[in-house]
Length: 251
Ligand code: HEM
Image 1: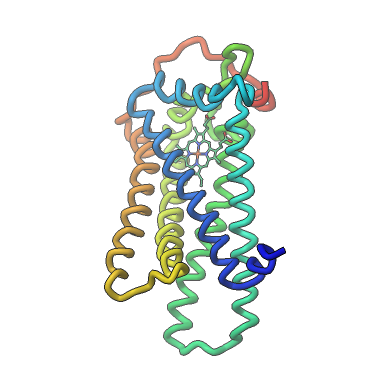
Image 2 (image 1 turned 90 degrees about the vertical axis):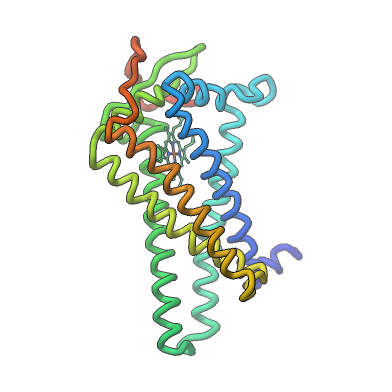
């Protein structure tokens, strides 16, 4: 009850947006780290994908930990979006037209960028999972093979096939730029939420927000860029078989 009461306040909502935002950023850093394994070769990234599914298998079963992570991520994404929407509504009701013209323009641009980039990220996440995880959306063929009775995606091969198409790579890099903008503004307002807004520290905080968002942009974009330009070589794995999309997970 006390938690619900706290959530109903503007500060409570900002805390929820900040905490879920941090969890999502941690996921992005981990995902980027995993993706960068492509530079170590097809064997390494495919082994990593396998490792994600066999992690603590005796306790949680095959893919169990991955499902827990998926559940946490889903809760965080939903809580983040719903709470931001509630905050916008609450703010609108609290101060209908009190901004000065200059403030209004600045805040509207930042807010618009957040809304636009947030919407792009949301659409991207859905399409991205349908592309690489389930193989439902296939701009380029997505392949799976069987391993110990479970269907596994051929990660390197699928990335190579997708990002060899210029428009898929360009689209991914565009979305990564949206994520960069979203994280920069998000990271900055996160620090302000917790009262860290201070003239002396502001410059350092802005630098950190840039380092984080640009670091993620470069790390993520390097994968489509290097496949697209041929810096990353084609896969040499043979004997892959194409499986129906529905048989990817849960075996
Ligand atoms: C160039 C950038 C990216 C590449 C190359 C990439 C690649 C991949 C691949 C290959 C998978 C499937 C992994 C597997 O089956 O083991 C995957 C899954 C996923 N990616 Fe990405 N990703 C990128 C960016 C992102 C971003 C920015 C987000 C979030 C905003 C994201 C969210 C996810 C999610 C939620 C999954 C599903 C995990 C699961 O349920 O198994 N990815 N990604």
